[in-house]
Amino acid sequence: MAKELSIYEKVDLLLTRIEYLEKENSALRVKVDELTERLSKYETPKNSNNSNRPPSSDFPKTPKTNSLRGRSDNRPGGQPGHKGNTLKMVETPDIIEAHKPNFCPACGKDISSLPSQLVGKRQVIDIPPFRPIVTEHHVYNCICTCGHCTQGAFPKNVQTPVSYGHGIQSLVAYLNARHYVPVARTAEFLNDVFGISISTGGICYLLDKAKKKAMPVYEAIRQFVLKHTVIGADETGVNINGKNQWAWAFQNPKATFISIHKSRGFAAIEEIMPEGFDQNILVTDCWATYFKTGALSHQLCTAHLLRELKYLNQRYPENTWVTRVSGLIENAVEMRAQGKLTPEKISEIHRTFWHLVREPATEKNIKELIKFQKRMVKYQEYVFGFLDNPVLVPDNNGSERAIRNFKVKQKISGFFKSNSGSQVYSILRSIIDTAIKNEQNPYLALQQLAYIC
Image 1 (spheres, rainbow, N blue to C red):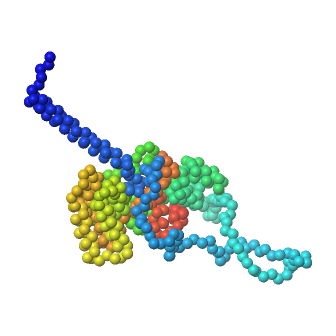
Image 2: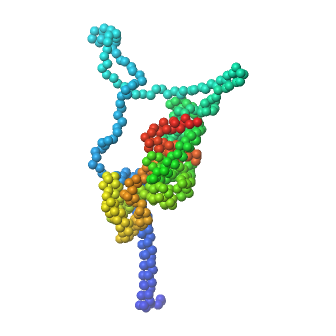
Image 3: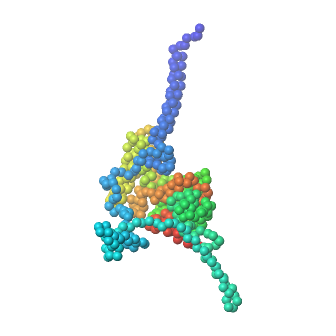
């Protein structure tokens, strides 16, 4: 028969058991908190509307659009000052067809020779049937009376027995870089519409030819971007034959320069912009690489910050800190746009933000919010720089528009098959975007490049 435990032994046993259970309970609480944290990320997922993620990452379940733009008192449709595109008659039509009556329906007499009066006109705008024009160049020689034989020369751009002209070169570049048409479909389009038989290899040859002609203009765009005080920058991943590389965009209101690099780090900026940004203010997101460049100053993109704050508000709906910070940024951007800023108001905004980012957290389990808050403390001088400097813009939307074209191109074509193909696209796209910013016809800009020998 087992010996009965004394009261003291029972107490020691219970205390030991309690201590074990308390440790187990603490471990389980930590595990529950960890799982709750992980689960909450699925309940409030990040997407292109509340973070810096691209729209392509929303697939296959695209969330309902939730824009940062607030309600407006404006009615739907075109706003005052909007330039519409109405179909208008031209003053000098190419062809005039006269429709005169030949007989009188009342008596049946011939009236074709009688005077008639114009009572109305209508125009039909159409395009003629497409047909390629083949130009054959003949070279002759001539023997002078002195006996010397002189021979003519082919034009510099006519170097092979049969070649494609400037019009085809510029059209191929335009379709590929401006309208994202894949190589095979470009060849199909030329055959179906113009009756021009060309292989995919021929298309690639013409694109590479356009790239070589464009290199001096491409470098001039890069230099022009560097001369501007404010430069917007952004980067995005690019699939090149199954491997990820990066498209870097540097732009200002008049020019866009795009380059491909295998790195997303500082090595890419050193190679693309070796001159550095000592005389420039960079407008970017919070990617750490941009803050290693030694730029004159920085401006954080407020659109990026507001998207992050939207996610944090969805993640921690009870927290008021998020709404106060987002409200401060939104009001500052709106006052800047409306020209309502005063030195006193600017100082008040800076002061309020300084206190907000140092406000101690009073809630538990808000790790992502605290992480964002610490980042704002680190970069606080770069959040409201646009209030003190009139040449600064509060967002980096121009750079996002520049790199978005790579995502559209990839979505249509799937991926770039070679580094050469991605470089061709980045060069031609830089020229096209720059032409558009300067209100130039991008097709005509590429056509002018095609005429370079």
